[in-house]
Amino acid sequence: MQDGFLDFLGSRAEVSAEALARVRQLVEGSADPIGRIAYSYGLLSPNCIEEILERQRGQAARFGEIAIEMGLLTNEQLEALLMIQELRRVFAVTESLVLCGAADPRDILRHTATFIHEAAERATIGAEPA
Image (cartoon, rainbow, N blue to C red; front, top):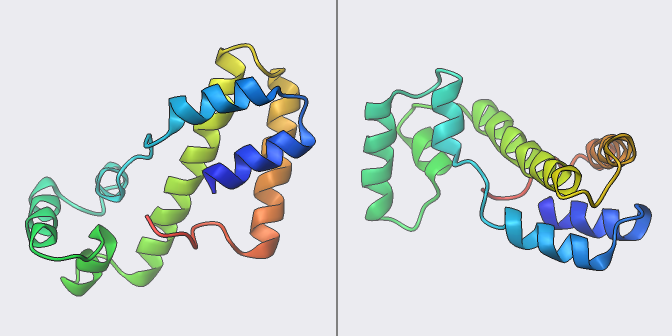
């Protein structure tokens, strides 16, 4: 969703290609891990996270898939966590554009709201893998 948001801004917002490229570099790989988000909401303990990570080392499975297999998260909880992760990525782009002076805060907030609304209409928020 983050790249989709940057593309969206490139086509609709008055943000330079240079600013978008700089922000892309700043926020690349900045997503909070699902385990950290789950912990912050009290869904997983540090011990559970460590168990999941230990199992993940021996598998090619994703963190959330393992947590579900272990009965530590439900499908619905994982979907919500993925949505939160993607929204945080979008907001990281928004924050970066405002803080580097590349976008007016009101304008970028309006574009952010439009993007999220359109993504929800397409039912794609949180559908991307973590």
